[in-house]
Image (cartoon, rainbow, N blue to C red; front, side, top):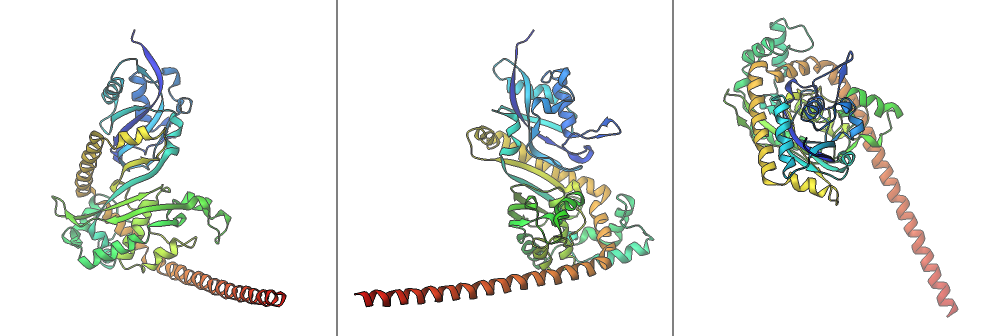
Length: 417
């Protein structure tokens, strides 16, 4: 019998999220769904790294991960950590990786292992997260009127175009594949994205469930948990795939993300490019609770690139591993593979055409809501301006009083002398 020892271990892994139910463990009607966590746990049991008696009890072994992604989202480099049984031998890391990949489905792949101090600390030691989003550039061309007319002509009476035959037919009819983004359109979109950079209030871009919790304190309140710091929000130059579609890649780096935040941020910026609202809508949404935000973009264009870990004695080894050449090469290789996969899949199902159809159906009701939101935002700005002017006046008055007091004091001192 081989000797084993128990240790807290971090695993670096990638995954194709198209058929998986997100990262977290999920169950429905008493049945465990095929999430990334579920596939990894089963593989760890089969590989002998988790005793069968602990199967189904991830909390007992300190199971945690760097980032939880939604259904359909892909990951080029995520991290899970847990207390595992590993072989007492040199090179146990490579042995564990090999045994896990032999048991995992092709959608999930582990490419590195590292002993860490405490598995439960891994999630809290992440200081920054990087994501990219693949977007067909026709989503940034003002085509909503044409989409709406084509929907009516094709007798598509639903709120949105069904993915598959309907979306492909609509793409062909409108010639979306041949559209190309102009330089001015690209720069305007980049300027809109740049508004997200900095520390802001992102509740308006969160999932409906999170919004209900954030807005529970009242429409004028801002829950501190809804604030996030975005370090970068940029857009690549357009590029063409083998099927003749043009794409752009959006890169976002932040300290963390709310559920659905990235997909609704990009959707809102794209809706502005479509002419549904002015760029000022972003300013309003980052300042005022309850402001309109676009419907979620398809999850399949989103890739979680990697986490970054804080500079501390316990997290430094994991950060060093993420910066090693073989890890960087693997992350770049998988991300490039997923970009090609996204393009191939969209050639079949045209998911972003369905998003355009949904947005087109929202134009009339959204215009009124957006107008009200912008009017309220203008009122907020005026209140802030008035408060600032009042503060300036009071400060100037206080300064004048202080100067007068100093002058009076000098007179008294002169009198004494």
